[in-house]
Length: 552
Image 1: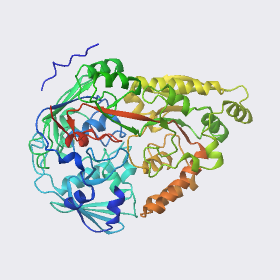
Image 2 (image 1 turned 30 degrees about the vertical axis):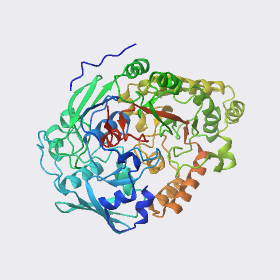
Image 3 (image 1 turned 45 degrees about the horizontal axis):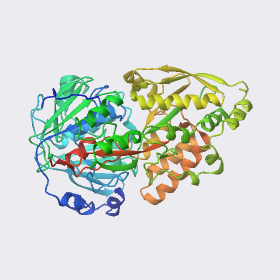
Image 4 (image 1 turned 90 degrees about the vertical axis):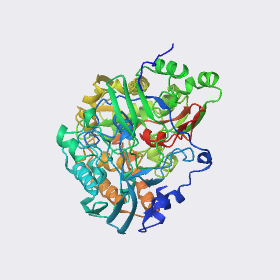
């Protein structure tokens, strides 16, 4: 089947070694060598064509969780103080930092960071900002809003920040209430976009397409909901020579068969699944049709998550939660997945893709390891001990709008639970309503979703487990756990912090406050004429495409 779109118009570890010394753009380039891929001469021009995501919840990064439908699109238009380096030389799953809007930064004390901004950076030439120069006041405004706007589920990412000061037009100082080992990592995530005050004041928030104004490599020229987004080159982008291509056309197609056919027919320059990936099930066909196809395997960040109301029966009882874990089969899910065909990894609390911080399953306690072994008979025994000898029946909230692949995963998960005596009745919700309610803990007893938007270890601990946090969906309230989580945040030495993070994951594996599905080993694929592209975890499509070019 052809899908005709011709009508579309036109490592942080190295950083830490430098301690409090200023890190300049030149120093960062020396640390993170671009490698042989960039020895080629880049070519300018052309349009990248990708299958992407509809901006279903709008364009305001401060009013939505860090999900793919918003963050991938803002990555084309917006900038941060620092970013994750991109390019063919970057190994998937590694997250080396480099400057973005910040020209350099220093850490005078363990609670103070000072950023020097690049001079001459301009906003997109669109009203109401009209291409004016970016200043330190814009940075201060953005992060003051991030910390104070009502309804920001990501606020905890900068929770330790006490004060933000614009010392002059190009200098910003952050003062923290305590040491915060993840501060730079968080500033590089795809919710930390700098936004213009004028757009917020004119539109009330940043949900509308007209308010999508940044300083990034491309500008949003047109948004047709559920159809396409068209991005064109920012003529005043602050990095000389970048981006190489003139624009990016993002087509929305929620049908896996349709988008696969469109890619094989030459409509897209990259594989059509999230992260520029192709189902392993379709890989042989794609390689026959595209013998020179470039590919890269890597463990993805995302995977299933089950959320349980811990203050309500039956999930108040740890035996019921452990039964749910024992009923789950990561092996069956990976084998049934068109993405994986059996290849992937089980996930502890921190996704396996974050390999520096995710504890290997074999290093869990004996009880923790046992709960990762599919054992429906033991699950039934625990249910009986907890007073549910005839099994459980419970409503389950989820959104099927993630993708058809997610719907298959959910069906298999529910089937494995049923085999162990846990019968669930699905109550599906529309994506926007789900993100505005269920993900924020507004559900009856049981919910299921995907997790994995932010490639930093800390939010999988802090945001999901500290009382009062918006994304603490299960309602975890465990003082011992909270103390451990706060301690790892305050620990600046990465090796010592990793020890604490491993201990936290050992503890959480036994408590089962959430239950985690596996992450697939995916295959990213792109055409041979696309140069210097490197896939990676996270939503930063724009960062990866900015340094790539077309060589037809």
